[in-house]
Image (cartoon, rainbow, N blue to C red; front, top):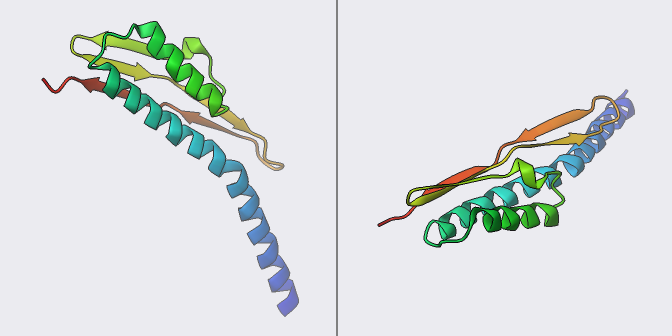
Length: 114
């Protein structure tokens, strides 16, 4: 009986490690893209960089992070003294028992301080 409990505990542990192995990189990429969007919005609020160039920079960052996104999914708007950047994408993860679709919506809006 004791060895059965240990075997079940080991199996549960292995399952948790597998799930973490599949999920952590997806969430880390999402956080890195969110950080890149916030930084781009903050810096571009003070520049005259065209919206297309901002979109291209975000798209390149998303590609470097292996995020499944198209350039059309990235929305950039100049609003007076600020910049708004938003996007939405879904990542499909095939778990053996239950496939999962994770939706992410990184965005940022920044205005000039003066």
